[in-house]
Length: 196
Ligand code: AMP
Image (cartoon, rainbow, N blue to C red; front, side, top):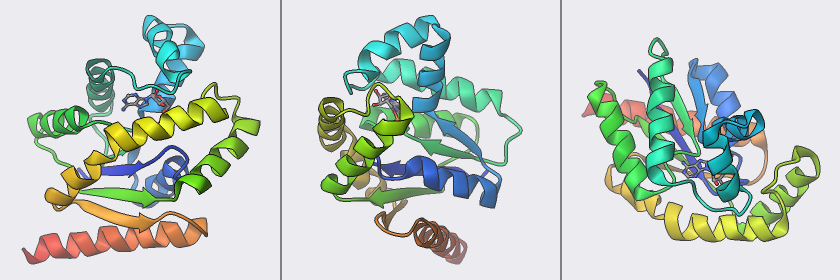
């Protein structure tokens, strides 16, 4: 299996770049945010819990979202690999992901870190909010989400640098150029792994 994590702040382009990676590498896309929004739309018990956190821009508790992720992996056992989008978002989630994959004889290949300045993220999310209808794409919730990102999620960058898996990608500008940079970073890591 070939497993990638696409990592970055809200609005950094994780969904857009995931779409490109799925078609290139034949991966199964797992977006915890999308799964949660689907549960909210369907009015499931999980959706009812998730709604109260998402609309405030807060994170869903680690145990709930980790269980959801493990279920989703097991539902796609025949996959060539996964692209994890929006998970992990905390250190405990990253530790849990390693454990879940290890138990299945797998691991994370690379972590693609989309790096975009906050001012650009806010502008992108406000623009998206005009069309997305998402309850969390409004200025107050966007500010909360960025605060949560900086306090709880960005420490994962060091976690994955230490694991030798972090590939920083300049996430502003042309979408195709960013996609090319991601493929180059994955290829380079592949070469390094083979040389080891
Ligand atoms: P996203 O679509 O990835 O931007 O996620 C939207 C919202 O869903 C986030 O702001 C969180 O409230 C929630 N969420 C998604 N993934 C996670 C996660 N891995 N851990 C906790 N909350 C999450």
